[in-house]
Image 1 (cartoon, rainbow, N blue to C red):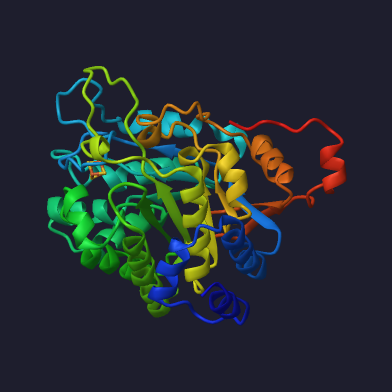
Image 2: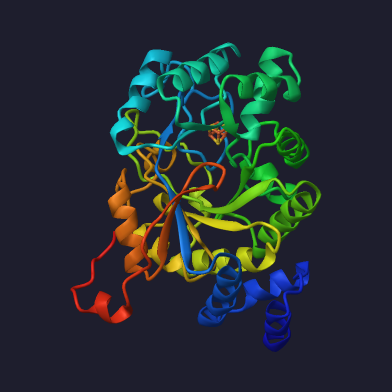
Length: 385
Ligand code: SF4
């Protein structure tokens, strides 16, 4: 079976659902890494893309209570917050000196905030930071906007684009298979709406990301199914720029009211680093039509993020200030912020050439190639958290 799969990968043949499941069943991590690295090198050489961005969460107040989510609060709960527009602008401007290129904004599904708030925030942010691209809202939020505004998704996207929206974010995808989804997702946006909204975004010229939340109650076959659905949609639209496997996190954070909001952690573990590397590798091998695979280092720690670059990933997100959604969950001591220089060092240390990109994956700046292994070994190696 390994020989067959290897032959298919080296011949550039598309892998089937059964191939994907077989890859997950394989415990030869070094072999999987070699195959994925071959594919990644064919597509992206020894380049690792990164961007300098800031994450903003305008509100953590949410009408839904997804079982894996540590971020959401109900109105009036301790820690519940909603930013005024000037506050959002002030926070965004804090990183102006870092030559920020992207703001990444996702939020709870606020029960009473009016639809008008959202395009207004975008307009003000764009006016304050005209060179910064706005990557905002999950498909779940767009579907929520349909509900609170009475507008269609098409009208909503038009208005948001007019206000400065460059791309949707890839969230809300989790695991599409209903067998799993019904137990973890508490809002109304499932595959049919998620794919409808991204298809629409692609028709309007956006390039969007797609995510997958893994390492909770799903099985490898659900991950393969998730990737197959996205691959089919990508065959149709070509609008996905990147696939991002996101590692499910337990809730280790002491919230102000002492509540643990993550309702599945009693019956789940979290994916170990080897499982994460396998997920990167299989995703890279299955997706023959999506150019990039991203490691969102906040969810993996920096050492695993460096390793993921040898397991199919070629994109690191990002500088990431105040990523509340994961930092409300984790206890791994991952930093809140990586500056441009930190990211460059991390990529060079791993033996790759850093390339700074913008939201549309256009090159902002190419940096020098990595120093040779001998040069890197001549100095004490850094330890990354
Ligand atoms: S995952 Fe999103 S929609 Fe679900 S509870 Fe959390 S904030 Fe709300």
